[in-house]
Every structure is written in structure tokens, then in C-alpha cells.
Length: 321
Image (cartoon, rainbow, N blue to C red; front, side, top):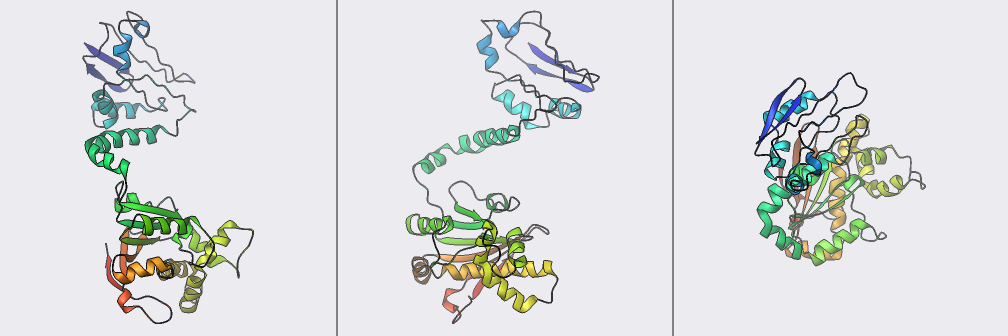
């Protein structure tokens, strides 16, 4: 039994053993029409066939969003070069879905990524995820920027259960003496309860938070949530101005992006329970800088044994990937 789909400018693709009666099923599209037109022709009313409906519901024929003008996409799917149709056929779930030209589902791609994760990762590693359901034991606490371009899991490949992650504007760590924040709560939980072995602070190129910090006049606008937060990096700004004030603003920001990471690492040592673990060797502090313009990653580790007197930190194990 074959299901045949006929689309103009697109090769015919067939799905063998489709669980319907011997009927002709076609999809036609009229490019002159102002709306997408799909016509289903069958010798019998397949959607209302009570003895076939259960079998039909186990299969799914997906007609992609923005059907009009997307013959190339259909041709690619028909050729079997994309996982969309093949995976869904393997799952034996077909569903007739038609999106209007101006009715794109913003969650469509997200859904496909989730279903791929479920099939290719979750189901293939079911025992691992069952253990994660009971408890987590990450080795890393990652403090990264909220910028959409620098997701640590995407860039560094962290898998579920590997890194407890907190993201904020400009990947800043507030001082221990300041008021409560979600970053401080994450520090306390991950270090004291989860007992992570590494804290990694990741900065990045063209950081909007650092640009806001470097552009501020004085203490900034107290009515601005952004200014009230990035002022945490004030010392990094002052340090940058002291050594790089003659540089172009963009280069000053780049200098501050890296300097701010080290200032955050230094502030981490101001948390008594962090400093104690670093001193005992059960916790290590690391800095990272992701340059997404050139796709490089710099990494370094705080050398607590060579800690500078007064202010500043010593670093070791520097590398560029």
C-alpha cells in the first residue's frame, strides 16, 4: 500500500505500507491563489472511517509551515535528506497540519528539537536520566552572561547534570557584603549543598553589559535596573580606564570584559565558605573568555597559592582553544 503526495515542482514521494484502504491521496497547491489550498481526494472518507481511524492516528503527515512558496523544502523532505519526515515515519505518527502564510508557529522548531532530544538522547540514555531525576551532582558551577549568543551548554557542550548554571548581565559576581541576589543564592546552593568542585566565570566579546558600564557617567542612573546592576563591575571599569583610556572605546570594552572576569574571581574569594574550600584544595576557580567574533576560547585558573598581597589574583594554566 503506497501513500503518494503530488506537489507541483516537487518529485513524488511515497510512504510504503500506509495503514489506509486502497485509495488515492493527493495534495495539490494553486500558486495563483491568495491562500494555501490543500485538497484531499480519496475514494473513501478516510478521516471518518471508524475501523481505520486508530491506525491513522498512529501516523502523522506533516505539511511544513509557510507551505506557499516552499516547494524546495518539500523537495528536500521528499528526497529523504532531512530527518523530519523520516523520523516521524519511524515513530509511526502522522498528523495533518497546515499553517497559513501569516500564521507561523514560533514553537515549531523548538518542538522538533525537543522531540529529537527525547529520541536521540533521553531515550538512548534512559538510565542516566533516571539517576538525574533522583539527584544532581554537577562538577561545575558556571557563571555566564545572559547574552543569547553565548549559551555555555551550546558553546562548551555541557550535558544535563554536568553544570549548575547561573546567567546574568555581564556575568558579574557581587561582593559578599552586598545585598541578596540570585547569583549569591546560586553560589551558596552549588558550593555548600551540591559541593561543586569548579567555579567557571565566563565573559565574552561585545558584551552589552560591559558597554553599558563603560558608558556610564559616575554612578549611572539610579532609576535604571541595568546601571544598578553593572555598577558591580565598577572596579574593573576604573582599572581599565587607568591603563587603556587612550584606546578606542571598543578596545576599552574588550579590556574591561577580561578584567571584569578576574575581578569577579577575586570577589569569589571574599565568600568565606568559598575561600575555605579553595584553600583546602576542594574547589578551584577558573576564568573563561569566549570571543564569538573569531570563535576562540581563553581559559585560566586562579593560583591561590601565589595569591597577590592586597588586591588582584595570580593565574595559572592559561590556554587558548
